[in-house]
Length: 276
Image 1 (tube, rainbow, N blue to C red):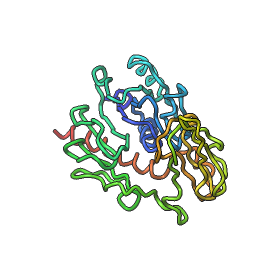
Image 2: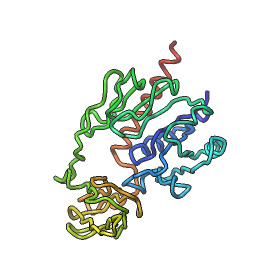
Image 3: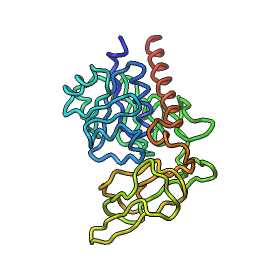
Image 4: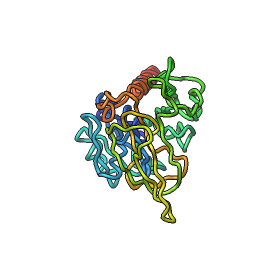
């Protein structure tokens, strides 16, 4: 079977998932992305999930288009682009016969993926047991094991602490100080100073809460303007390396490494299948 005929379903279209989607497209697979009705990607310019809102999204030189049904999705994939469906419950499985399924939601728990969904199943990060919930699991923790294909057991548990860049870890990520609707004052790619407002949160009773920058740096990620957030919700990401402007719009090293693990896993499972 030619790779073009090998349909891969990817659950999730955030920035980490998009690294995998990009690599699968680059290798010639047909890719169908399944998303929620309101994706909450922070690194929006490196996430195919934005197609839910805009109808089309482009990450580097690859494109993903929103489809209304599986028939439309197939036509999109025939052009070499990724197709997207708003289908968090994988209802499309009734029509599609995927070659493989990748759970790239990164929810730190299993939101319904099972090995019965496809002949080959791969899950990213903690919350999955290789051999039980999916055939293989890919390590998503930064460090020596990042991108490793796990054949037995689980990925390392989530620490809740972002990777350290130039001495900054938890400070790089900004969480909503209150519940309400986002009103962005700055945009991704802006240079910001610690303490200056990057957004406001408009509460249900008319209260306004400013969101200050947590450090000097490059605003690498910012949740979509108008998005409804709860208190503590992740809404922004600042990179202290102000010279790394292009990083706001390209796939990260972490996402590429994980994508390599996914591709290895798919080829490994295909090889094992051929040996039977």
